[in-house]
Length: 471
Ligand code: GTP
Ligand code: MG
Ligand code: NA
Image 1 (spheres, rainbow, N blue to C red):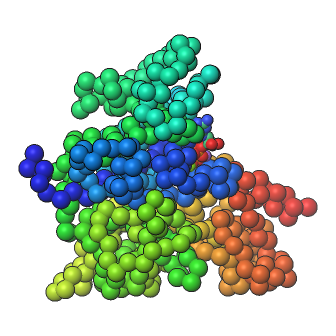
Image 2 (image 1 turned 45 degrees about the horizontal axis):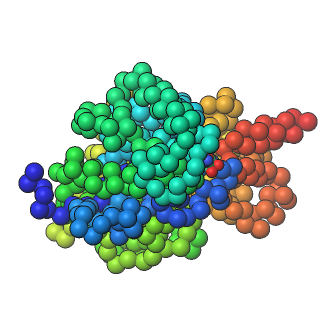
Image 3 (image 1 turned 90 degrees about the vertical axis):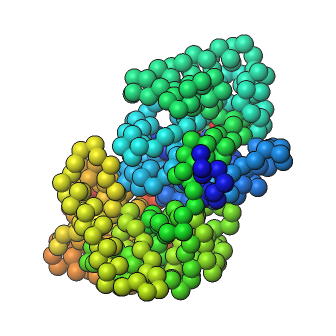
């Protein structure tokens, strides 16, 4: 098309799938990192973005110099597969250009695989299936980093047979869910039939194939969508508290440029907040943007990128909303009105609860007068905690919440429940530190601090507390 000569931006790719399918490990394999090993309970509990520059992708795929790649890189979003993190998955899938659905070849389609497919259908996003853990086929001979066809040729007849029937099984399961899929190098109708790439995140077979599909085939099918546009398009992915920086937002910059000093508007439930960008941070290339990390500072950043924005007044920003840039000569009040119009529209849609429609997943935390105090590393984890407690029929109300480490002030606020409903005088501190003074004050005043490190332990931790209280 006519987009051929235009500058393209990096495609945004969301990784989805059931818990433990190998999403993070696949990314580790691509980045040569070890994020997965360091995760509490071996599960991902945060949404994170990674920028993969085209040079690294070329090196990873042993691409010959004469082969052109039209995109400058790839922006990848890793999501958790645990059921309680559905809002993070929804947010990731709503803003991506393409998805990779990771399926464990030994398990086939699972509950959150199907949920992910529903999300992608709703948001009208195409996907590639990474049929992962092929190295688990009995007798597999590892061929590190090899393209999958080459790796398969190296296997015994038995391995190849098991591989074939498992592949056929998965294709049937996709069919039962309304999707036509085929092995990508046998796929003659790539427009209508979704590609499957067998992979191993352990020995890295099939990784070159997956990367090449993402940087060569994806731009081919959506070139117009990837044409770089100067108008800023930017979505808030997370809100989190960072040591020494205060409340920050992690955004996905889809188009345009952000500068230090830009006047921007974020949406909160109380109305628009206008602020100025103090700093723009990214992780180093091939590293992940999450709540903790070592950052690179930038004067300006060009789409597509995952960016941490430092500015005043971000603590009530709502994840899932757009960040609006006020340009020179713009009328501020008018800009604020536009920003709030979007949020009003989204909220009314959420309240109507239109089943099956593509609804922007905007964060809204409901609190009551009587309830526990919840402290988390980000808005997304806070939502997951609340979803998890609800799902497990733990009737627990939240009276207050905050992001970042537990400080003395948090404990003081939590003591309010001592007089109202004593068992609620507890702080659920999830993926955050407890400052020593806070711990001291809590012990003194009778506020209980619970610190489960995974959602799995959340319910037990809380019921244990209630039982102790009853005794
Ligand atoms: P969540 O983020 O919790 O949803 O899981 P995930 O999909 O990111 O899976 P993760 O990367 O945490 O991998 C889960 C487990 O499977 C880990 O023990 C990995 O080492 C293992 N694993 C992942 N991919 C492979 C693979 O290709 N081969 C083998 N043998 N093990 C794998
Ligand atoms: Mg993971
Ligand atoms: Na996992």
